[in-house]
Amino acid sequence: MRFAIGDTDFLLDGEPHRVLSGAIHYFRVHPDLWADRIRKAKLMGLNTVETYVAWNAHAPSPDVFDLSGGLDLGRFLDLVAAEGMHAIVRPGPYICAEWTNGGLPYWLFADGTVGVRRDEPGFLSAVQRYLEQLAPVLVPRQIDQGGPIVLVQVENEYGAYGSDPVYLSKLEQMHRSIGLTVPFTSVDQPMGSMLEDGSLPTLHRTGSFGSRSTERLARLRQAQPTGPLMCSEFWDGWFDSWGEHHHTTSAADSAADLDVLLAAGGSVNIYMFHGGTNFGFTNGANDKGVYRPIATSYDYDAPLDEAGRPTAKFHAFREVIARYAPVPPLPASMRPGGSGHLDESADPGAGREARVDPATDVAVRLDRVASLRSLLPALTDWSAHDTPPTFDALGAASGFVLYRTEVDLPSGGVLTVGEEVRDRAVVSVAGTVVGVLEREQHDRAIALPPVTGTLELLVEDQGRVDYGPRIGEPKGLVGGVAVDGVPLERWTASPLALDPIAPAALSVLGAIESTDGDELAGPVVAAGSFDLAVPGDRYLSLDGFRKGVAWVNGFCLGRYWSRGPQKTLAVPGPVLRAGRNELVVLELHASASRTACLLVEPDLGHTEA
Image (tube, rainbow, N blue to C red; front, top):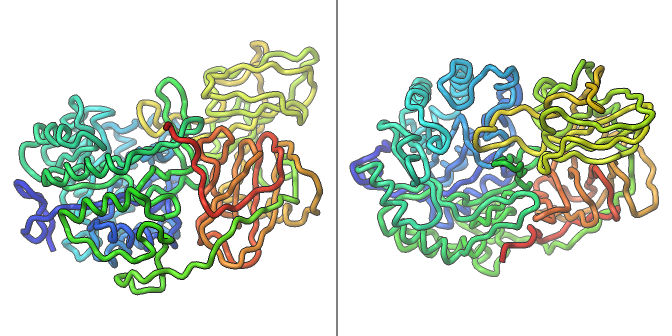
């Protein structure tokens, strides 16, 4: 088959074709649930699935390129094909996506000499290698080779970042050089000169917007007089940041704008069809003068919620799509009031209803408790330094680094960080926490009490900036540390082995005797067991806890924070098992409770309304 760009339409084997796509990021969804999410996209009436490719997820270090398990992009695309659907792939190299560092590997910028998103030899050389590593996955899965891929996007919203046609041209040539033959696209907001700055005549321009479709399409047509109109990011919701409200949008209003878009003959990629979750330490952040880390949930108020259940928006969008294209029958379980689940054992086209046993909330007592300090031998690999190294220098992409030095301060003093804390430091002296330095509050100084002994700073990377000029910046204690103006030297430092959590630490926790009590004084790690008759999606509530990280059966669910908005962490059904399960929580501060709860329903927090 052939897919091409005509004067007015996309062409599938020479016939006009409308792209009806929805975004699903394979790296935000447990791989055992990919087929379910893809099938539900088809049931809403979509004929295409779109995904970014997160370079940094596949390449945690320069000598590794991982395509296994939850990063098996080939398998994800094969599942799209198995549903009889097409695929749009957006390999970047920059993706934004509210994903840490916008998808760019931290190690790329560790020595400070490599450019970011520009015509610079070090950057382009790394991109070439990345695309060559993707080629065996993408090239044979193009539509003209019998696969599902019909479009590939080059870069991502580049017009909001720069205007360098030489850089874009070299990127385009690299994509072609690995054997990609399908049409190439670009995407930008139909505002100002972004559409012109972020594309080339050889790239098909598409727009990103979620409202005022008539106006946005007119601006797109102005920038590109011929070819099919496409909104390749139809924003149907928004992401959440810690400390803000949970974002929702009107299903009726979004459906009305989608109707306008389709009535004008446009093609669409709904962003997001299913958002998923920023598991582990994968969330990004924004910094436009104030640093704002993005929450663990990426529910996005999408047509499928974080657990893959249809929302009101699913049904509203499906009704609109049915006016312009055939939609398959909807099984009863997917209709309003149904369970929202499909029977994975059924034929993919049959839509047979799932038989789901009733689920109940499960309380989990965290009865095994160990201070973080006592677990450090199982979590650390110390190295010595004259000044505090960055995360990047230590080979730490994300998570936590513990910094230590010895001090003699008989009268105390004021500790200062020279440039910036990136992003949050719990400060302790002689094993006692004395305070917190937060980048979000622009904190750089803290008073220390009299002490002779060990000074520790437990620094958390809360998410690398994913948008704008601060992409690629290092993490840690940037600019050195001093007390009363005198630089502190002779440091030891170590990343903490938390994602995945070190098996040796789990072994220590498993051997600890149960204890009574209700409170936790952090930094502390607490563990507890619970039984399930039938595993299925749950939501972890840590009411009374303040801030930290949680794991179920060794799988890192991500960060929690009492500041919200989200009050629960998604626990995918495939992570759980029938019988005994283990919950581990790292609480950085303190908790008024040692009881967690696995809920049947999520709580993503208060909304603006």
